[in-house]
Image (cartoon, rainbow, N blue to C red):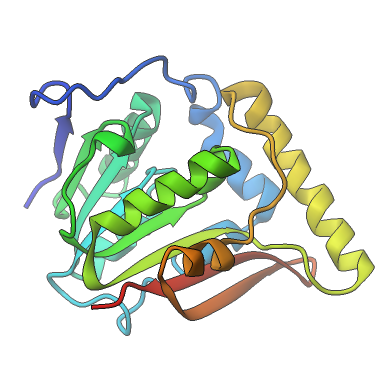
Length: 235
């Protein structure tokens, strides 16, 4: 199966696609990610994507494509992958990466849309939000998370990979906060993303009925700067 690109507007659904916020910073996304974290962000993004959690034929949705290496990894494990992104720039970068890596044969459907217009409810065995929810202010983030849960099958999984909530000693907490504000300030300036503190995703996930099954931490300078949280949607 080859990749398929779908625009919700073209398919008859008004996506409300507006100005591409990642037009300027999108082309630099891979470079900035590697510069800022080394391999830690990539390791975080694939932290829950392994043979224990992903089975051949699973339907997996990625909200926000980013550099897309996590989506490619899931497809290589045998999953049927859908990526949804409002940014045409990020989708073009993803498509370019597929071609450069000779991965265009993988079963990955690309959808250009606002996540709220994507309404394939309870269709997905796993929904992944890697470094996606931090784009929004806290109230809107909670609504986006609620929608992602609605897209997940009963008995399915919701994965959130992002900056880890500050814990530990005063040095660790201070470093995490300073490290976060460098990143959020950059994306606030160039992409108009929301400016906010680091979210405690497990608490938000539990409030919305998910059972936290696993969490993994990923270090930078021996500090747990990133985490991936696996939530289970009850039957």
